[in-house]
Amino acid sequence: DTGVSQNPRHKITKRGQNVTFRCDPISEHNRLYWYRQTLGQGPEFLTYFQNEAQLEKSRLLSDRFSAERPKGSFSTLEIQRTEQGDSAMYLCASSLAGYSGNTIYFGEGSWLTVV
Amino acid sequence: DQQVKQNSPSLSVQEGRISILNCDYTNSMFDYFLWYKKYPAEGPTFLISISSIKDKNEDGRFTVFLNKSAKHLSLHIVPSQPGDSAVYFCVGNNDMRFGAGTRLTVKP
Image (cartoon, rainbow over all chains, first blue to last red; front, side, top):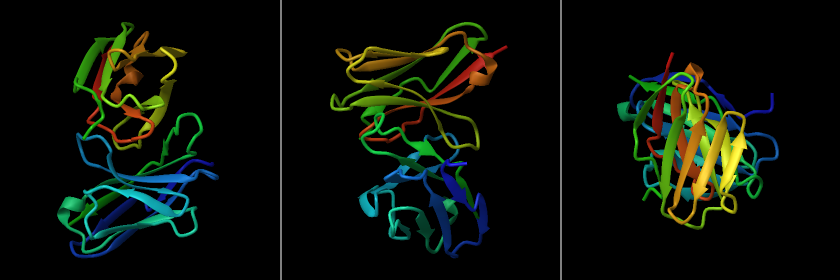
């Protein structure tokens, strides 16, 4: 399968712990996005990369959140000192910029529960 | 600031009838508009798009209409099926920010 892959799919952690999510985009997609979704809301944009460069970060992305895409392929999203309000589904998506209107394709998401 | 908005949080239609989902935008620089469909506990899936140089794009039961003078687009689903029940989002390609979407319920 060559879709967007995210892992782990589910993570339960204690408040104050650090967590890291990984995203493997569709091969050859040069853009990679991270979103967060809570119940009843649409996906909230967090950040995106073009190749290895992080081009935009939402103001929602506090200092406890960091994302990397060191080789322009997979990406990691780390949340430090987790809080209960961080509980959400974290979605990764990828696209090939300039092709078909930059259609982005989503992974199945990583669920985070902070207890 | 949200450049693409869906003003109807929900829509309910009878199976077999037409569903019309609406979207308004403020940025005339978008090249494409995209519609996504989302089931609970899943990531959004791409449904259909329309180029800003067109006024209609059709794919099976799904048709997107774009009215550039009104800065309005709509997604028509005909005939609606219970499996179409989901949350639908429209986004502009150069922004890729999602609003709250419209929850469609198709009743059998």
